[in-house]
Length: 623
Image (tube, rainbow, N blue to C red; front, side, top):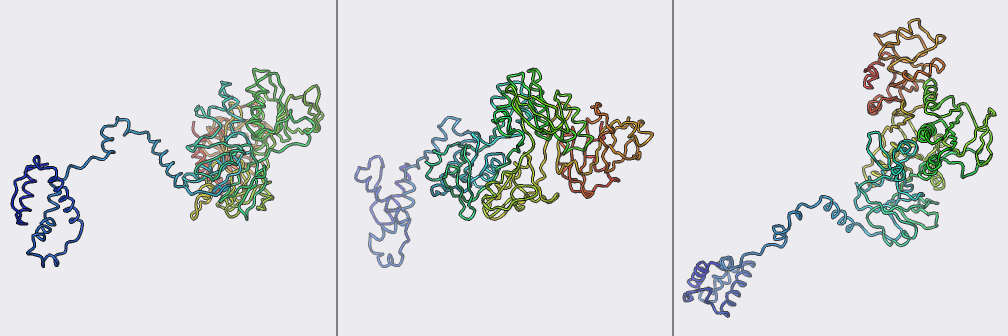
């Protein structure tokens, strides 16, 4: 303390209160006097914090006590300010200056963790067996919904219920990339390399930590806490929409605030295979199905029969054949259509695709159906309707899926009798507080009408919109996404697509080179002269020259007009699918990264006079 300032303050008080001036040396003040100064300081502070009473003081002007009080009122704060010890630094300030440098460069994740803990602490307590959000089905749709819910409601308590012993995962790599791993260790770890060469795992990992638990652990939970829990190996036997409850296969009843049905699809089976034995037939759908088939093929010297010529059957036939090529594995593919992808591609393209699948070592048997089966010497003997017999060590059934609506049907939800699936509105809501997403959803497509889509992209984006709407009390989003899908069939075929691809529709095909046609089907004498054109359109009618290119028409080239051995004729192209003169689907053949361009023209009226401008964004005419 500044003793001179203190003495000056005391002298001022003494003069005003008529107290004799005393020379003060703070160091020499006796202890009892120092206590007196402390008391003075306290008195001055108390007066500074209360209102003065000038009227009463005016009647006591002759009193010394009044002078002292008045002096304290006016000069007390000054005395306190001069005599008060310096303020102590806050502990946090001291820590900041003396702590190691790492303490104030904390990992940003710690802040997120603290925020999450704080949010969890602030989350409301729930009654036993109640969950604000229950997601039935542990696939990609539920995963996407979970992330969307947690983004909008960070304190949300979510329970995901799945019938497998694994968390949400991607199914597409099971018939594609997983078979092309160079490392068996990667396959065992369920890892693969995507089209960009980046190593990934089929199990979906996001920023949310998913806690797996079994039935016993679920029973012990007294109150659902903020976070995500996954009940594995469980089924749901009943959904009561009125009571907002679900019943597990174990008999346990849970209450929900909002529920998502994302039960996916169930693989179709063939009754004719019932005599083949369950251990020798796989309906390829799950991770366990993949592990079973991969282990069998890995052992070598096996005959594998794949029944089905669509997306899954064709992908799997090529993938297994390539993987088992040096293991003496023989793959036979059987289906009733004229060629691979016969229900999807135009006939000429389906036939050419079949030739490419055969080049990958697959024995393809189109226009074939299985008449009967039996076990012969520990193998399955498949007798075709033609009388031909095919022996196989294992049979894979890939003839499509049906929407898994058993739970929804039991709950009284509206079902789509034409397409299958649960009928939902534009916000993916089936009933109050009941939402649906993924393969089992029949939704209204604002461009193409009501649809049910069985593709990964639809599951992800549909699940996300459903989750956002579940976590929103007021503003709901409309599902407008045009999902895409993709496939690879060997080294020469890769494609992406949007919309409706149906071989029964009219198609327009634009290719970088015109397919070679037989003399009988050539419709113009100068057909051969047009071979050098940079880009030409496949048609079955006479074509008009337009510069160096042909004008497209809505009539596809017949399959018999194509020399399928010429694989270079379909190295890059675009196929438009038409319905009522409108473009309802686009197939981009070996032409990648054009999905957004395809979405822009989906639903437009097709005009032959404007086809050049229409297809320009797809780069078909580029070298």
